[in-house]
Image (cartoon, rainbow, N blue to C red; front, top):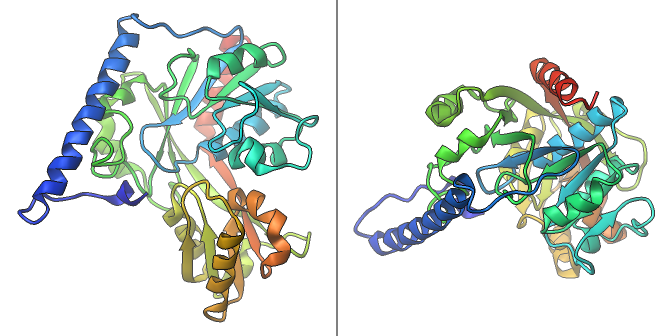
Length: 359
C-alpha cells in the first residue's frame, strides 16, 4: 500500500488532501476507541476457549511476518508433541461455508482461491495440521478446540471477540510504525497506546534493520511486563519451477535478478535478495494477495523479456498461486525463508507452556 511510507506535510499546495485524510483518520480513530473501550469496560466480552490461545498480530497495515511466525510456532509445537490448530481469516478465500477446514482430507488439488494463499502456504509446510478459515474466529475456535491442544490465532490483535492467553505483537523493523498516524494518514490500525495490550513484542527482520530506534519510539506505550525480542528472517533455500533440487541462496551472489511479488511489504523482499549479494535489476510489485490471472501472467512474461537476467524470483506466498501456470512462465525461482527467534524467546515460550500445563 502506498501509505506504508507516507508522511504528508501540510503545505498550501496539499492542504485539501491533508485535511481530508486527517478527517478520515480522526473518524477511524474515534470508532476504534469506542470499540476498544467497550471491551475495556466489559460492555462487550470475549469468548474463552477450553484450550490455550496464542494470538499473533500487528498494529500496522502491511506485512510484519505473521505467517512466518505462525509457521515457526507450528514447527515448535509439533516438536513438543502438541497438536496445534490455526485460526485464520483466509483473506480473499472463496468461502462456501461459515468455517472452512483445510487439512489432508479437504486440500484436494490445493486451489488457492478456495482457501487463500497464506493458509495454503502453511498447509504445504505442515500437512498434518488443521487450519480453520473464517472471519468468525469464535466459531472457528469452537470447532478447533475439539481436536487441538493449543490454538494459534492469526492476525488476532484486533480480534477481541476471542480471548487469548498470550498476545504476541509483531513490528517489522524495515517499515517500523511509519509516521505514527492512524490510517489512512499513516499505517497504524490502532493508536500506539494499544501496544500496552501486548504480552510480547517481536521485532521481525532485525537482520535487515536494527530494532533499537523503534524500541525507543514505542517504549512509553508498553506495559511494565511486556517482553521484547528480536528475530531474523533469513533466506533458507531456492527452488526452481523446473528442477526439484534446492539451491543455496549463496548462488545469487553477483547474479542479476528480477523479482516478482504480491506481498504486504515488498521492499523487505528486495532487501532480503540484495543481502545475499545479488544484483536486483527490477522488482515487479503487485498488490498483497494478488490474483494471478492470465493478464497478470502476461505482465510477468513481458517484465522478464525487458532485459537479460540470471534469476527470476518470487516469494513462496506468490508461488502457491503461480504454480498452476508455471508452464506459461519462464523458469521461476521461489525463495524459501526461515524465521530465527532469540533463544530468550524460546526459553520464555517453554516456561509459559509449562505454566499453562500444556507441556
